[in-house]
Length: 397
Image 1 (cartoon, one colour):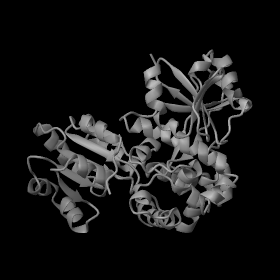
Image 2: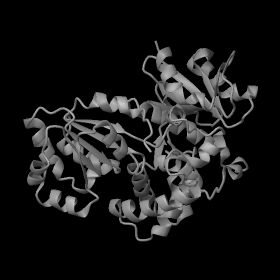
Image 3: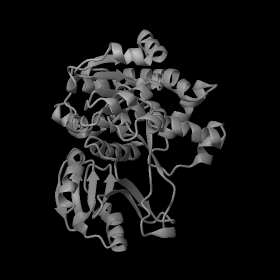
Image 4: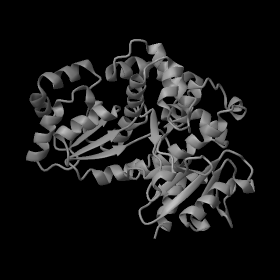
């Protein structure tokens, strides 16, 4: 089953580059999207041992054999990074926009290779699991937010009707067995999975390296290394604090989030969306859903997300999300409650006083169903939040 993806438009625009890179976690739909948009390209998968060994041993002959007038899709190209030097030569010698389409699921290995070989020649895009708007467009958006949090956004959940309790444990196991071992030397894979579970339990919290080290029984150096692995494979991301013009009055540590709440629920041993509604993690997971979806909205436009949070040193004032659109800064507060409570706007009101921001530029996203304009700011339902970035970009001028 093919789902319409919001990244399709940006992918067509970026095909003016001789090389197009589509990066993202495994099973997020990169291959399906690439083959749908570039229907006439030859498809090659470097997870196939025969194709991979041929490309590694004779890269020049490999590219010559598969040369054609349309182009080539190379899936999981990070397995043969040396081929990028030969792709660079091809890109420089021949004027063929969008000829090479590369997909991969390991970010820092690819960026390192690209920095050395394809800088200025490649248009890079990120494809994450399905966003709220994509689920809505494909008419598969769950009616209840807790169900969405529990299911997550991986396409296979919706295309193959997998139960989250079936898909995610298998995904985690294969990810650790295959990707983690390639990225870093992990002696005890069970310890790494325990580390992932500890990270899931700290969603939305300030990153505390020493706490993770003590709780997992590993060194702080190992914590930093493993965090890099989780970031590189698009499992987690760190949300940076906004510090422009605020100097020493604010916190400098990032917050930890998962790109997919379904995966996080599995790590937290949450087995149903009914169980989620009673979980102490519900608020953090709702915040994770919204923050990660805002990230997706920017990535789907081909943009790096200008998304931050703000918190003073004493923790008395905190704004869950700040979206920096250059000439305008939009504060966003996130509350899991399904009913509106006036005190939800307190942080936004305090922020508005400090930053001299008009309340009409403030947004409160909550677990309810109604959108309203209030004196203290804009009240936005969780499903309407799927179009927040597009709405803000219209308001920025």
